[in-house]
Image (cartoon, rainbow, N blue to C red; front, side, top):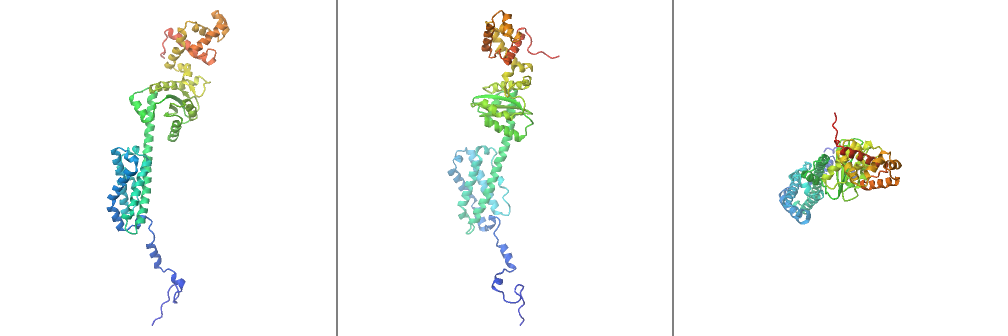
Length: 432
C-alpha cells in the first residue's frame, strides 16, 4: 500500500485545527459566486421579475388612486393636465418594470418618462409637485412589494425601487432646469423686444399683451432710467442686473442696447429709492430719469425724454447723478429735442407772456442787465424791490427762480425760444 502523498499545506501530516480552518483554493471562487450583487435588481429572482411584470397594471391603477386621494393640486388640475400627469405616472412605472427585467443596464432612460407630456405641463405643475408625484409612485410600489416579490426578495425589490426613484427625481429636476433655461432665454428676448418698442414709441395692444406675459402688473406709476455700462454685459451679468431690478421694484423691465441701459421700474412703492438702489449697476457717466409715467404710452414719452437727456447731459458738467430729464431741458434743446423746446415755451414763456403784470418785460430786463437788480430797475424806471417782487412772481408762475443761477439759465433759454417762435422762426433749421 502506497503511503499518502504529502499535501501542499501540511507536508503529509494530518492538518491541525488552524490549518483545517484555512480556506482551500476553491473557497475564494465560492465566495466570489456568493458575493452580494452590486445592483439590488440583480438579487431579484426570475419569479419576482415575472410578478413585477404582471403586476404593472395593478401598480398603475393603485398609483392613480393615490394621486386622486392624496394630492389636492392634482384634483384641481384641468382634465387635460390630469391625463398628462397620469401618463407620466404610468410611464414611470413602465420604465421601472422594463429596467427591473434587465438590471444589467443602468437606468439611463428615465428622461423618457417626461417625454410623454408636453413642455407646457411644467407651467401647470411645479417641480415640488412633480417630486410629490414621484414619492406617491414609490410609496405605491413599496406598499405592494410584499405582494409582488417572491419570498425572500422583498428587500431587493424595495432597494431597486429606491434606486430608480432617485434617478427619476434627478431626471425631473433636469427637465425643469431645461424648461427654466428655455423660458428664461425666451423671457429675456421678449423683454428686449418690449423695451425696444417702448423706446421707439410703438405702443399698441400687442405690446400690452407682451408686457402682461412678462408679469408687468401696471399698478402705480413708472420711472424710466437710462445710463451706460462700463463694459458690455454678458448673459450672467445681465441676469444679475435683472434680478437686482426685480428686487428693487414691483415691476421691472431691462433693455440692454450695447453699452446703454434702459431700465423701467414701476409699482406703488418708493420708486425714487429704487433708482438710488440701482445706481451702482450703471457705469460711469450720467444717469437720467425720465418723467413719471402712468401708462405704457407715458412710458414711451418718458423714455424719449430720458434718452434725449442722456445725449445732452454732457453739456451740464455740474449735473447731479441721477439727473431728471426735465432738469436738462435747455441742453436737450441744444441737441435738437423738439419736445424740450415745446415744454420750455409752454411752461415758461407762454404763462409769462399771458400775464398782465409786466413779468416778461421784467425778466427780459433782468437777464439782459447781467442779472443785476439795480441795473434792471434803472432800465424799467422802477425800484429794485419792485424788480425783486416781480421776479418772485416769475418763480411762482413758471416754477423756475430767476435768482438761482441754473434756473435763470433755463428761463433765459425759454425766453429766447419764445421770442423766436413769436418771430415766426422755424423750430428746426435745415442744414445745408
